[in-house]
Structures are given as C-alpha cells and as structure tokens.
Image (cartoon, rainbow, N blue to C red; front, side, top):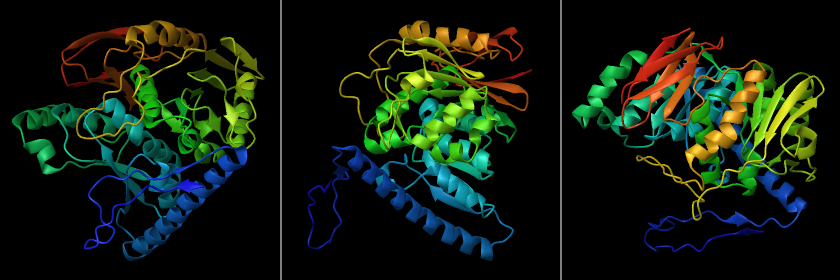
Amino acid sequence: AVRLPELAVDPLEDFRVDEYTKPGKFVINTIEDRTRWLDFVHWYRESMNDYTDFWMQITRKYFPQKPIYLCTGGDASSPHGSNFAAQCKVVAGHQGGIRITNEASKYATNFAITNWVSSAGKFYNAYFSFEPAGKVTEKGVVCRLYNATATGAKGLHFYEGNLFDSELKTDVFVDNLRHLYKGSVSKCIGVMYPDTSLILGDISSSDFLKGFELLREYTDYIFLDDLTIEDGILDTIKIAVICCGEIYKKQTLDILLKWVSEGGILIGYNIEKIRSAEADENYQSVLFNTQGGNKEIGKGISFYNPIKINLKEGQKEAITGAQPTFIPLMESNEYYQKNLLDPLTEFLASQGHFVTNGILNGVFEAKVDHRILLLNTEDSEVQTQITLPDGGKQSVTIGYNRIVEIEY
C-alpha cells in the first residue's frame, strides 16, 4: 500500500501548501510487492512518454524545419514520472531533442545528473542542451562549458545573472569560451545506471551521486540502462561497470552476461549481491569471482573488487542546488585511490585500455575530436601526468578554473 503524507490544506488556497511535502512511499515486503511497484512506476512513466509523444508530434507538424525540444529536469525519481532514456527515444522519433534543466556548480554532480540524457541522446540520435536549475558560481560557469563540450551538447543556456552579476564570472566565461564547441565525443566505458535500485529504494540519491562522482573523477563514461541495453548500446562500448545498486531487471542482466561471454569486459565494485528484480535470482557469482580478481566468461572477462564505498552517517538524500553538494565518504580519497582505482588501472592496462588521468586530484578528462579536454576543479593550479591512448605519458599544467586541450 502507498502511505500518503498528511497535507495541511488552506481553505482559501485550496490545495496549495507552503511547506515541502515528501511523496509517499510504497511499502515492499515481498517480491510480488517489488514487481507491483516497478510495474506501477513503468506505467506512470510510459503515460508521461505518451503525453510527450503527442506534443512532440503536434509541435513538429507546425514547425517542420525548426529544432524542437522537450524541456525536462530533476533526477528521474519515481514521483517525477521521467525516464530520460525513454524521453530521448521518443523525441528522436520526431527529430527533436532534450533540454534538461538541472545543472548547478559542481562538475561531478552536473555530470552525474545529465549523463543519462547525454548518453541516451547520442545513442538514439536526439540532440540535447543544458540549462541550470538556478544560480551558478564562477566555477559553475566553467564546468558547465566543459560539460557541454565533453558530452557533445547542441546548446548551453545561461541566465543573465549566471554570467554578468560579477566581473569574475564574466572573465572566466570569456577566458574559457573557446573550449565550447560541438565535436565528436569518444567514450568506450559504460556504467550501469541503477534505475531499478533507485525506484525500489535499494540505494539513496546520495549513494548514486557520490558513487558516480568518484568514478567520473577517475575516468569518463556513458550510462547504460534497461532500455538502451535492450536496444543494443552495449555494442558501442568495450568496458561495462556495475558500481552502484544491486537490483536490476533480469532481461538486462541476461543481455549483459551474453555481451561479456562474447568478448566484453565487465568490472564490478561496491556491490555484494547482484540480483534480478523479478525473482531475486543471484547473478553475483555468475558475473564475478566473488573473492575478488578476474573471471573468464566465455570469450570475455570480468574483474571484481569487493571494496565498498560508504557514506558517513546521515548522508542519505542529496538535494542539488546552486552551491556544490558535499557528500562525505567514510574513507579518504587516498584510501580509494590505493585500494580501488590503482588496481583498476592495472587491470584495464592488462586489457589494452589506458586510463587518461586515473587520479583523484580534481582533474577531469574527456576525449573530443582527437583532443583530450582537461578541467581543473581544484582551488589552485594543478600539475599532473596523463596517459595518452597509445600508452605514452605527458605532463600537463592546468591553471585554476581552467580548461586545457591536448591533441593526440
């Protein structure tokens, strides 16, 4: 049953309330309850997609030669009724695009909440653009420029105050504007988006954000989800990662297993029991060496690290805004560098893939038009050594709040 919250109704304002009211939660006690809730959310989202399809069709009819966008946003939680991959597929059918309105001022967070749209948009050939949810800082100005280029966005919207309410914002915008362009983005790593786990409450929004923020600082990647996997997105990547959420649809897991057995590379960490939503069937031992290390699966291979990424107590629900969202981890960056990321770099190198930066030093990388784009999010200049696609090394200095491009 759904537990509905108490609502304070003003008799003069009808159902308008000033205080924030959280949505009710579906109580899940059995696998049947789980399936029932997933079916309901799917129906709700598909109803919204039907509505989207109708209006995109009408808009395209009267504006046959113009770019048309579905304006969407938020974090795709169940009450929002949005599945960003499905929205991309719908608008692509009308030669349309997505304008997602949820960026803020921290690059890693912006990436985590826009990557579903940019990944599915590219896969379904739906163009997309980014809009901030509100105010942004001077770092937000630069990281938004970077996110647009690093994903292949068609557009980037700024409110006037985002750029002109301080000279500092205007200056950093002008200094970095040359790095804003639409190029050919190259990514060979895909990470499982834990949509089912989020719907079921198996993980929190903070688990989601921090897990993907940490991995993004290590390397660049696209999101994989139930719909895009069903439609063949695994054929566009070489490496798949499961690192957040343990409950996935059985069909998704079966397709993933088949892809690995045919030569794919699968990585897993921060997970202990991967299982199907419909029957609770355990896939952990099928996909991974549960003790850690490599496992050959047909023509492919998997690598598992039993390390966990734990948040400090009380950090469960994250609400993004104009200021960066700070979500503290139980362990230090140095701990995860040594025990998670360095072993991962070694494994990937053994498979012929060289991680460009691979260090938690506030520097982010992306590959666009045979260039490596580097973003410095630290509070000072950073000197680092990157690895080129052929395995060669190059030292780079990146100024504060700057973007640097390296040709290869």
